[in-house]
Length: 462
Image 1 (cartoon, rainbow, N blue to C red):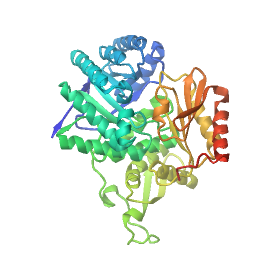
Image 2: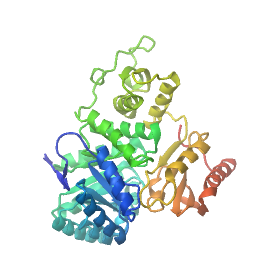
Image 3: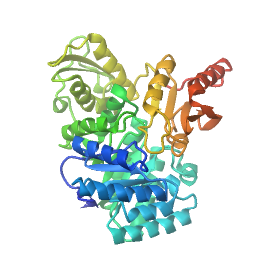
Image 4: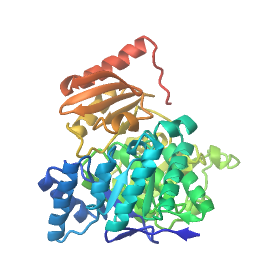
């Protein structure tokens, strides 16, 4: 079996050891001072690779300045250019960045054009020493793939294999693949399918893992830990990003915990291997593990350590339908933990693993240089005002570039359209365009209530 190692600046992705941790700036790349400041903060926090949005040639030039100034300050973290829709920008960025991220669904609508322009990008990458991330997302697979496979894990895998073959045809192996989804089941299945396919083909390319648009707070951390640990414990995954709708610096300790905790690559196989005590008397020991309740004790230093460790331990079993529920006894040395906090974690874990829905499901991007409104505070307000809508899946997305596609699973969406302007979506259809931000949540609720009265929508979750 051939395992490819990919060079991203001074970092090797695909070598043995724990997964490389990365994040993405949420600053405008044109704001050079703010972007440099955030890159330094991310580097100091432990980010090993840093990505910046690079949607145009002006951003490419700004990235060049950012990289030069960071190097002058002694900060040598590899920088990744995040490119959508323009292969001209991707080619220009390949002369500047250590890695270029492209989204195949947005790269070119015509397959022959995509092959030609990808070959051109590869020729520049060979010259400059730049690597490429083929960043496939569940919600933006492209019409040709969706027509053949639907927006399914199988379609995501097929799209990845197609671009792997295109790279191989051009004699280029410095590629990293990602198959992101906000749905933990879709995400894990897609990566497993691709990993199996690569093994059968005889070449393992590095995989970048992430739950896209995971949200914020406990929910975003739990959802990320569940899916990432399920794969890392199987030896799948070489670099990770935890996407939170927060300051990106907050992503780093979460990602480092997950990467370190799962670096052994040992997949759970039995109760003893995940250190789960025997089932208690009130649960029949004759019940198969697929119908059992996991009971486990935790003695940890902090609440965050608890939710991350428990999500990594138990989330994969719930995700893979090897257990139905959990009962926990928790002791946190740094602070008392109330019983309702444990129950809240249980509900969040069951929802993250798609086993039981007790509140709305949210899809929210972490924001980037394309976001032109206060995404973090808006998301919190949307959550507050829609908390009663159990069974609904609601998206809050920073921009129109990715928003409509990446909210593939959402019933309704709040999508940034421009500076303080928002589009309100039902599914993939924009119902209201260019709504002033101060009116947008009212419009979202108005649409949901009207659809409910007219019986146009019934919650799919729960």
